[in-house]
Image (cartoon, rainbow over all chains, first blue to last red; front, side, top):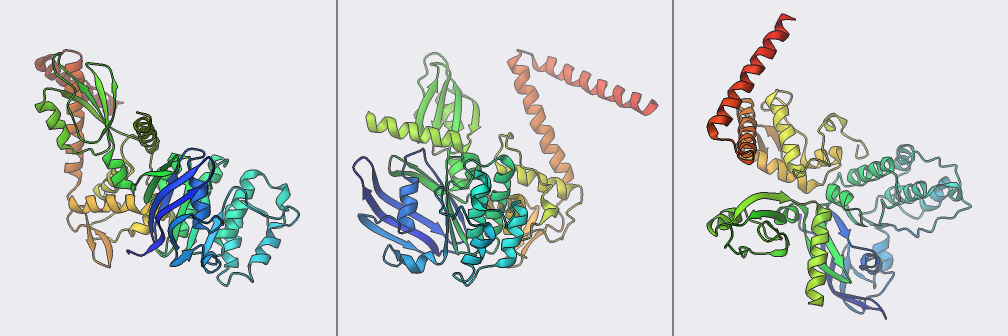
Length: 298
Length: 142
C-alpha cells in the first residue's frame, strides 16, 4: 500500500520567536506515526497546519487527498482530532455529546461508542465538568473514534494518563487500525508509547525535522559501541558517529549508521569491541537532539 | 468484529526491561510455541495485523518478526493467504543448542574477566555438571 494519507512538502511557518522550517512528512495509509519532540519543538504547530487551523507561509500540505488549508472542511469530515485543549461542553453529559455528533457524521458507530464507554470505564450520563483529566481525554478519544475517521490526529493523547488508562488508549488505537484503511498520527514526549505502537517515527527539534524513518530501520541504525584501545591506538573513524564519550582508553561511540561489519573494522584497526549496545528510542532521541544542537552552535 | 481483541495470543509477553528489540522477543516466543507444539506444523497462525492488535505492538515490528521467522524456516507465508507454521520446523534441538552456545560464550567471557585459564573454566564446568547430576538424583530419592 503506497497511498499517502498525509504529505507535507517544504512547509514553512514563521512567528516572531519561532519558525517551522522546510517540513517534509509522508504518512502511508494504514500506519501509525509517532511524532516526538521536546516542549516547544513544533509538534503542535505542525499538527495545527495539518488540520488547517494554522495556515503555512510556504509549501504544500495534502491530507487524505485534500490540499490544506483550501479544502479543510472536506478533509475534516474524515479526520478525528484530539488535543489537550479539547472543547467539550462542561455542563453537558458524554451522552449529550454522542447524540450531538451522531447526525453530523454519517459513519458514527453508536454500538462502538457504547463498547468504548464500557472499556474506558466512562458513564455516558456523567457531566463533563465532573470528569478527571484522564476521563476527559478518554471521553474525547471516544468521540473521535466512534466517528470512524480515516485519519486520527492525536496531540499528546497519553500525557497525564495513569498506566491503566494508557494501556487502554494504546490498545484502542491499535484496534482502530485493524482494517488497514485507517491512519494515525500522534505526538508524544513519551518515547515508550511511541516505540511500542508506531510504524513510522519522526523527530522534530527547534522547528526542524531531524530524523524520520520506519521504526525497525530506526532502531537498527543506532548502536553504542564500547571499545577498549591499546595504548597507541587512536579512536577508529566509523561512519555516522554522532558522539564519542567514555574515557581515553575506553571510548564509547554512538553511531546512527550501524553495520555489523563495523566490529571487524574496529578489530582490524587494533581496537577491541567490548560490547555493541542497542538503544531505546529515548536514548536515540536524546543523542540525536544533542548532536544536532552541538553542530548548530559549533 | 473490528473492536474485538484476539486474546488467545496475548500470552506473548513483551518486556520493557528486556534490552533486546521487541521483534526478537516476539520471534523467540513464537519459536518456543512451535517447539513445544502449541503452534503445530502446518497450522495457520494469526495475520500480521491481528497479532499487532492483540499485542498492541506496531505492525512493522510483527512484520519484521515474521520475515525473520520465514528466513529461518519456522513459518511459511503464502502470498495473499497469510502464514502457517512450516510443515517441518524441526525447532526444539536447534533452539536449545542456540541457547547453550549463548551461555557458553557468556561463561568464556566471564572466565576471561576473572583471569581464569581455559583448563580452569573446563574444570569448573565439569564440577557444575556433577553438582547438577547429584541434585537431580537427590530429588528423585525424595
